[in-house]
Structures are given as structure tokens and as C-alpha cells.
Amino acid sequence: MFRFKMLILLFFVLFPIRTYSQVPIKGILENPYKSFKTGDTIIFAGATETGNNNNLHYILKSTNELIPADKVYLLLDEIDFWDIQQFYYISYDIITKGWQVDRRKELEQKTLSFLARLESDNKLYNDKFAEDYLQRLIQKIHYPEFSKGREQFLNVKILNTDKKVCYAFDNGTILISTELIANIENERQLFRILTESVAHILLNTNMSNAEAGSKSELQQLGAIYPENTKKRIRLIAEKYVSYYEKNTAAEPYSPQIYFFNSIAGVISYTAWQDLYSQKYRKALLNINKLVGYDIANSTDYLLIAKIFLKLSDTAEANQKAMGYLKKAIEFEDQPLPEVYSEMGILQLRVQQYEQAKESFKKYYEMAVTSKDKEEQQWALKMINACNVFMNLKETRFRPADSLDVSIIKIVE
Image (cartoon, rainbow, N blue to C red; front, top):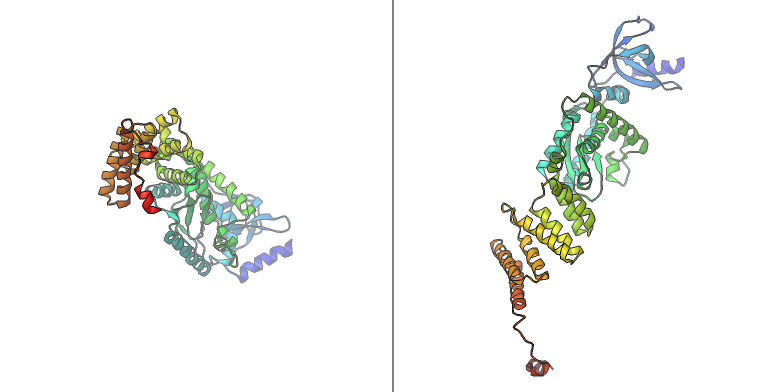
């Protein structure tokens, strides 16, 4: 044991402290140790486990000497939660290796290239309001600025994918997917997920897990973690959530209606993607979150109506679909041409031919305004179809032998 400690001390002498930005933590010696007396206040730069039993030691800031943790009472009351975590989990690496700024810059360039490709491929979901909401939650977890040998900032982007994923990158970027956001039930769940991402960033898990030769770009960037790392970070995140809730004077989380309203765009977008993928029940479950709090808009009510029309042709289903389409039309500030086309089709289904004709006329007017020739032609066809249905009672089909068959003979 003594030989091991001597090797540790020799290591610190040969490799002196490099620039680090963790907050030094004061401690009071509870028992005499070497030249220190009981009651002495000592400043520590970090912590490390040594020996066969992995005994915890604190690293003296001035000399890098190791002092057993069981002889010290740390003064943590005024220390930030994340500074404490860095003190325990990454201080030794930073003291011995420094921040490896050049390697971090290289990792950041690869990360920025990865994000730029996502944007150019339209794989990032653009919702400024939702992004601002997520960014404000991040600010409750940790102030956006942090340092890893140089100034960096935490920021959130939304990944457009049907997978429930959240990735954190060493440069401070967090990618959270539309699918994950849309399926979160309350702000506390979202806060917990974002806290875990912040913990990954502040505690250097990307640097320790980056695999340069991996085929997966996310593994190259260190954003895929082994199970033991995820477990450790989860525990730290849970500690912070408890710490945050205990130390927040007001209500720590927003009311449910505020939460859903902040991510309403993401929920609506995801529900439409589910509609296109024929995941009708899933789409309804998500969009009902908005309907239940009366924050759904015209596109949301249109979506519900389309699902009802896809699933059933009963009188009850048609009546409900009609109600949702009428609700969508009430949003005069955002008229949707598709509402009128769906309304016209539904009215044809229930044999309301005159009303259907009026719906298709409105749809035609909107197609003219948008200069959509193809939709104009379709609307005119549907208006003609309505006229045919309206005249059906007066129309009598001629017997086959009285039809003009001259055109048939010409073809023959």
C-alpha cells in the first residue's frame, strides 16, 4: 500500500497540475495527519480512489498530496451541485491529463460536421418555441456556460426521427428526438432526461467513450455509452432532480397545460407522421393530449377527422368526423384547404350533395389563390360529381340497345 501511494505521489511530481477550472473545495481535518492538525482547513483540488480497496483520497491543491477522505469533513454547503460531481468524478483525470483541448477541438469539429449534415438532410426539426422551452429547462439544470479548458455553452436541438433517443455531445449540444418529446407525459420526465444529458457533458463521458475506428458516427463522437456509464449517470441525474426539487422555492415544474402547449408543435408533427405510417391509434393518443387541454389547432382537428374516416363508415364515426372538421373550420386565422376537401368527401359519403358542392367550391377558390392547377382541376371534377349525384333522381339510364354504339364500331 505504501509503495502504491509513493507511486501516486511521484506521478503528481512528474506530471504537475495542468489548467483546470473545477472549483477547489475546502475541508476540515477531523483527525491529525502528517503535518496537519485536527481542525486545520485545507483546500482540495479533487478526489481519487487508490489502493487495492479503492479507498477514497482527496488531492491537496497546493502539493497534490493525497489525504484519506475519512480524515476530512468537506465544506459543501456553498458548492454548486455540478462542481461537487466534477470534484469526485473527473478531477483526477483533469489534474493528471489536463483538458486535452486539442483533442476536444477535433471532437467538436467532427460534431459540428455531423450536425451540419443533419440540418442539410432536413433531419432537424425546426420549432423555435419548443427549442426555447427546452433551452430554459437546461438553464434550470446548469447555467449554459461551462468550461473544459475553454468557454463552451449548452444548447438543445430537436432531431426529426421516429425513434425515442436523446444524445449528448462533448461541445455542449444535446439532440432530443421528436418521438421522445411527443411521448413524454409531463415536465418532470423531460427535465429528468435533459438532466441526464447535461451530466454526460459535464462529466466527460464523451471523451472517455469516443471510438475513433467505429463504423457508427455516434460512437466516434462518444454519444453512445456502455451500460455501466449510463447507470452511473442516471444515478447522478436522479440526485440532481431530487436536489432541484428540494431547493426550488416555488413549484419546480410547470402546470401540465403549459408543458403540453410548449411542445404542442412537436406532438402535432409526430401525430401526422404516425398518420402517414398508418399508426392511427398512436396518433390519436398523442393528439388527444392537446384536445384534452383545449390547445389543439385546425391541423390537429383535421388529423382526427382523417383518422375517423380511415377507420370507420358508421353513422357515429361520420358524425364525429364532421364535428372535428367543423371545429377545424372555426380557426379562421389559419384556413386549411384540406379541411374543405375532407369535408366535401365526408358530405358525399353521407349523401349531403349540396353541402359537398359548397365545400368543393371553397376548396377550388383556395386552390385558385394558391395557383395550384392540379388541385383546381380536381375540385372542378368533384363539383361536377356533386352535380351528377344531385341529378340522379331525375336521370334515367337508357337501355343498352338504345345507346349510340357508333364510337364502338369505329374503334373496332
